[in-house]
Image (cartoon, rainbow, N blue to C red; front, top):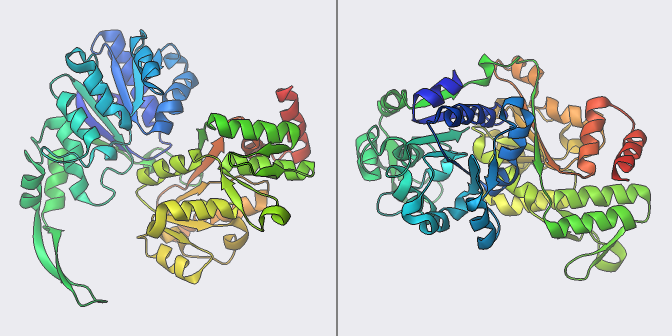
Length: 457
């Protein structure tokens, strides 16, 4: 059905949550389009992490898509130009490259099919204003592109008003209006609202009661929603492993710690492991993005950030999720960095204030340590069915207790007919992967470490 929608509707949207197979669906459809001659060259857009790994990794998973040639239009300008010269089927790049790409290709734009992954990135498009990236894409979206496919888990994360920009790339305003102003004037009105704290009166937009049904009716032919409960056993969590690649500098620090139990960070700070157990912990810290310095020399709890790959992956997951995300961390430095980046959209569930804020459902990220919210914290299943392990750790029991805060039993007890999603952010070729093996096989840490070192040799 999903592939049929993509093939039958040249300009369409597929709305389906993370881990439900959107990428494999598109790759299957792409193979058919290329084989039949309906498409010649396909451009896939996405966040940098997605462009780097997701499309190539997913193509290799399936026998019928392994033959697809994928070129990554990333890196320096010379590297991007070289990628465009490759004879590939699919070219992948990140949204940030759009202004350069459209300008560089000019009238020689070769892509007859565009796939916009995490299509909410297009929500800010406006005919006369908007961001430079969407404006650049808008110049070719209807003149040069025959097929336009949008993928999203949450097409309207901030309300229905987010839809106009995305839908313009599909039908040039035929369904929702020729401009954003026309769209807002048709389905939204103005009203005065008084701030209960300050007493200040301000004007805000509100959606007319009839608007939701009318808008959904107009978009019915363009958009297809895949509901996981129609396809998955609600009693089994849906597991999604999100692999991230360490940047070269972080990979160097990781390897030095792994081999020599010592590394020197960019600002000259020294990080040393005094035992095998300490080395394992330091490697896990490096995989997550920040390494702790020696307490006696630099002070207690001082950590230095060495990469943000997992932060970018978390951002993608959170934007794709239509509910708040319960995030497990092991190292306080990870909690602090997430709180720093998400500001008032993240809550520390170790505090009464943070827990109360998260339970309102208006906070995007709820941060908890498995040791502190494995027991005694209830009601989270009414807020979300999605949890994410940002940092990895060995303790299987604490892991399972954390998941069960929003797990299948809790969901069923509260009458929610929806699956539990578990996302693991894993740095490729690191101890992170050993932790997953421990959880999957319940083998001893010792056996896993031995196997890991055999593979390294």
